[in-house]
Image 1 (tube, helix red, strand yellow):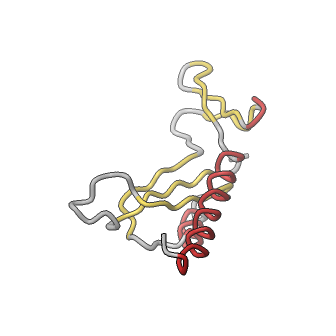
Image 2 (cartoon, helix red, strand yellow; image 1 turned 90 degrees about the horizontal axis):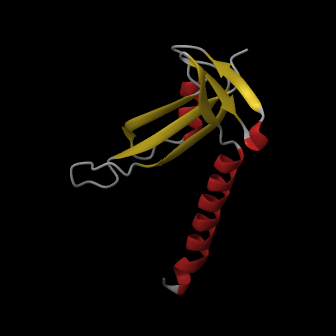
Length: 113
């Protein structure tokens, strides 16, 4: 890395680290508790919500245009409910040779109640 780019690179890496740290703190996991009913656990094993058939708490979106701002994605997802977190990152999926062709977005919604 050239010295004139070091500061910008450090800021970018710090932004990525902060984003990852925020997503880990908001991470939830699901467990099947009976039939198609799932319990969603937050940090510390606390039950955050019970999800019944055809309900979801996390939505993954692929193929949005590169450069999609996280704030715009959040606004779009808020049409469907209160968003706990919204993440936009480069897609790892093949994109026909153009690495920056699309992004991966994930929205996690707040308890539906």
